[in-house]
Length: 116
Ligand SMILES: [Zn+2]
Image (cartoon, rainbow, N blue to C red; front, side):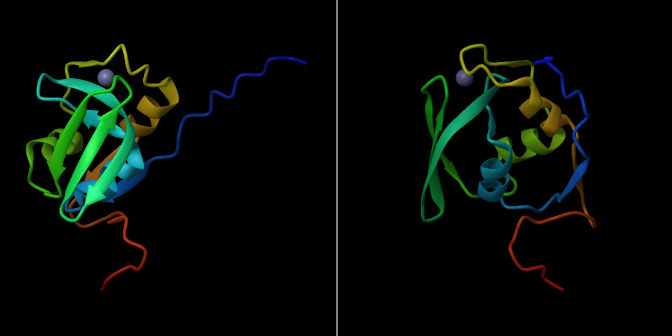
């Protein structure tokens, strides 16, 4: 009956800086637009090395799976000016994102099998 709020801070997670862009956005479901707004991702349709990303505000972008693309860098560096209001990105998702860290030599590459 009591409306208990789970205010547990999300666990810190670490990803590799060289993580593939597709794997990364599949995981965090956020997309930084060129204008600096962070959108929520509704769907990702990968077609080979390209993918069509549809945001919750129904914008569609075609992206390539590059670790060095603008979006990949912006996501890693958490560069954004604001959050898209139409996407209604939930707070927990933003909290999860802000507790995500990118390291060069440490963290998951988000690949099923760890490579050595
Ligand atoms: Zn949006």
